[in-house]
Image (cartoon, rainbow, N blue to C red; front, side, top):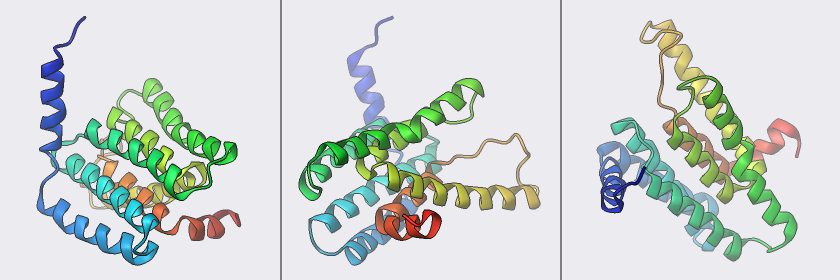
Length: 197
């Protein structure tokens, strides 16, 4: 089966049109402030801010249209490579840490989605893979812990107030974005609290 390249390109652009919204603009402002305030006005702060903005874009698109734009995931992966080259000591150990980050969450999510139909969307899996390249495996674990806690609280709220049923599907990109963003800002603190790393 062949695909029309122009149609695929139009779909990629169409996905980006799902981002602009009041939610995006509000949280984009929070992302810029948080990234530069917490990480500083330096190369690390700038890369962190860009990463947070891309996470906000994914969350807004998921909230608005139920999609995670492929182009944003690709941009996160490219940002991850650039951040590694600019801000980290280039070595085999650090490279392996980031490569493990790609698979440590995304592959289990993929396996679960193959075993349980509709458990996770493809966009969520791509987002975790791309973010893993940026964060590395330790911060990915920290981010997923925070995201799981936040989404768990939301599900409990939905069930308690009968706004959803046990088998209802929820969009999780916003929770992933929140958890991964918190990990980008405070990953060291979270790991110390959770695992004494």
